[in-house]
Amino acid sequence: MRRPAVALLLSTLIALTGSGVPAAPAGAAAVTSEFGTLATTVLAPGLTLTSTSTSGPNRVNILTADLTEPTLKPRYLNPGTVGATAALTTQANRVGAIAAVNGDFFDIGETGAPCGIGLDNGTLVNGPASGWNNVAAVYAGRGGLAQIFLDATITLPGGTRLTATNLNSPNIAANGIGVYNPLWGDEPRSQVLDGATRAREIEITAGKVSKVSTTPGGKVANGTVVVLGVNAGADALAGLAVGNAVTVGYAPRGGTGAQVAIGGNLVLVKDGVATTVAHPKNPRTAVGFSADGLTMWLVVVDGRTTASVGMTYVELAAYMKSLGADDAINLDGGGSSTLVARMPGATSVSVRNAPSDGAQRAVPNGIGFVSTAQAWSTTVDNTTAGRFTASAAWGTSGYSAERFGADYRFADPVLAGDAAWYKVNIPQTADYEVSVWYPANAGYNDSTPYIVATTSGNQTVRVNQRANGGRWVSLGVFHLAAGDANVVGVSRWTTGTGYVIADAVRITRA
Image (tube, rainbow, N blue to C red; front, top):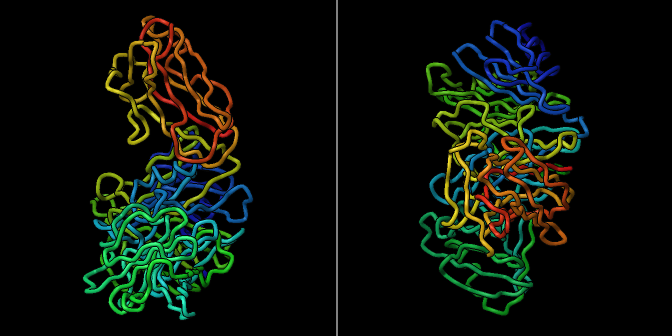
């Protein structure tokens, strides 16, 4: 279809470069058009970030992905379980994503679980059999809109087959049956009943009923699957008893071959035809695809301020078309709208837009990219929430200007175990370089033991913290196991003299 010349200019710049922030960062291209100042940054081969302004006024950040780039891989992001929320930066850094946007609408204030479909590495994580089935899907080398549904069957002892209506969902369809597996997390499933007068929950382990209850539980044990019926769904499960043989099978239907998929509430553009659904101006997040499926746009529009008022659905659809999208879907917006990216030289992602809540909202999921051309890296400071632990013997100081972040921790040496630990989510078992940051001082320890938890056991490297402060110091390359665990410790057990310092660690795929 024919597009205005200015829109063509914008699309060309996006394809050639990427983006950054309203003022162009060092090394980024910048150009002024009638849209405003356009700043572009290449984040990785095939992935660019664009920051621009439009009439409205509106500030817009755009990730443009070349899906044919072999080093660029789509990733479904979440906190690790379905019934949980976390900042998008946390979710992206968890898997080493280069950039991402927030995803589906969700059960805010209750379970936190997404309303629609979630597909990670081809596996269905959550979703309903009907309702909320529109998704943005990414396949090998292409992408597009799709409809994906849950196909789930519960086979009872006499051969009767029941159809499940939901998988790891925040709500169960009226008179339906939900299936919950260990991906659900810790949230109590009493929150999914929505006023149902009858409920029956069946736990199934190794193909047999291991527990029957009218009170829904929470965490699902590994090797166990739970089916929870409400009203007529509960009645259909009423005859089951402990020891009965019951099988549960489920799989996605639709989107065949999709690696990653994330749900939205409204198709904005389909085959070049834009929506006419009315809705007030708001912050927005959307995903669009070119007609050939080879280019993908992930767009966040700021809103609710005088600098950026947001867009209606109709305006957003028109904007997605102006970028070149032949298909586009609306994701969760409002205070959820967030775009994060790892800028050149950084070791973790940062927020690139201006969330309307004034800070990131905890969300259930997102969609983004990792790059095998860019080494995965993450940094954990002593102030990183949930990632650093130390006993009360470790004091806090902001004395040295060589510190990383606002402060650092210190403790007297002792001939006893009392390590401070940094917890890191390692995405894949492989070799990683481990570097540490500390302020140097003549009163600090000249033989500080750093402990690295490797696949072959703990290894200790001693560092003189009286020298080389205020920069990254490499401990070496270590083979680390995938998973979320304490990876680097700073021990007080040393015969060296002076305070032992724990400040920050950085782990980078070798």
